[in-house]
Length: 317
Image (cartoon, rainbow, N blue to C red):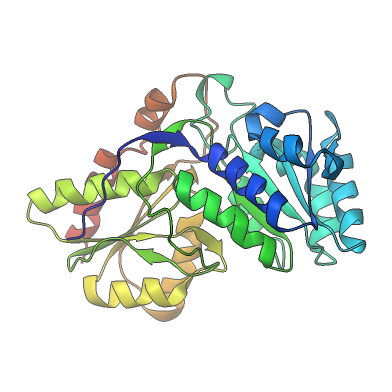
């Protein structure tokens, strides 16, 4: 089994900020817009180096989406920045009508996703955003797992022509992906090899899946862990290749069980190779105010929850 370790923790939003700053230096068409959350989105370096290509829209997220759509007509590549809740639910009509419907080349960059923004509470936590965005025709949906992968994803989406939703988080999480690993949209990354069970995870839960795989290994269970950083388009081939070997699967995500990665995987399985599946996700509820660790524990998103789901799904084979 390939081992992944980390030496430090860093927030994925800082990976976005670093990627955006690099794009500012290498791609003159990249522009950035923010809805009064520059510090939270780590956009300071881009602004410092390229102030003429930054637009502070204020607390007017719908206007930001409309302006971004307009900027694409002149050949610019707009990156919008605000919390995930405000990047999706608050502006869904504008995203649908002004960006997705006409395939505008806007990169919707969304921080503080999922439960782990913590103490800001349920009104700022979003557990529906992946579902909302993946349902929009032509919208690419990306949810990287750590600082390095978020930076790489930010740089990669500038080269992709079309609308993209890039989702990342607030808390410091382990950095374990290689700094120089190429980010390929729609191509999953196999992290460990296994024969008894497939674990597919996205975002912050990729690290939890790796920790779960080590616990399962200690129990004599061989787990294959796959990092699904791109939820749409989904890497059907990687999923089907793995379950053909293992015969069962657990999906893990910091999102509502309804509408997220797990349901996308279920579609692939039922159309091609129906095998038992268990879900590690929030069970159709809003979050609440607490620390990220407390919320992960209460809502069943830890490595121990993945282990429990793994043992259950293996028993169903």
